[in-house]
Length: 264
Image (cartoon, rainbow, N blue to C red; front, side, top):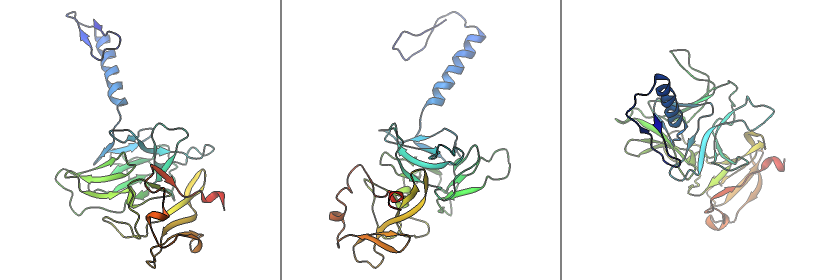
């Protein structure tokens, strides 16, 4: 027989031979325990889909996975990062904001060259690849010996790292609408991959994470000023010629500048 005292986390077996049915139930329960465990890492060759998520470690501050921001349209799903265990869900980063998934089972995959890809479906058994919705657009010419892994940090950054902890890509360098503590705000994105302007762009609406009407970034003319632009190039606000004093909440845990849909 199998016995467990209340509050104990071990299984104790007696000398009596258990029945096959009992063994089946025991193995099934152990499998459920393993399946319920959370992880902060997506390994090379793995994919994340369905209700599966990554939860940052060790504090479990952030969670990454697929979500549907518009209840009337549950089929429109996005890969995002949000605060773990906080309701209502507070999303701080979205990958495929211009191309929502519409399949029943979108997926996030990490390729052998270190590229993250959001697919409108899954690829299995040698079938044709699912449509590509978004990619990190960066890859290594040769994969390191230990391969790559994507790790969700307690800072809220999703990072693609090699075995020696070299960062190939990170979401902090490619923000959406939210500034998080630890971000380094620059004129252009840092790290490997094609260079692009670092902009924080509002959602189109409360339920639509596609790019909205407002964007914040540093002045491309190197005036040491921060600007908010409306509709692409109309100056809506600008700071004094400074940085830290212009962002008094920069070191706070969470700062979301943009609710552009409120003023549109």
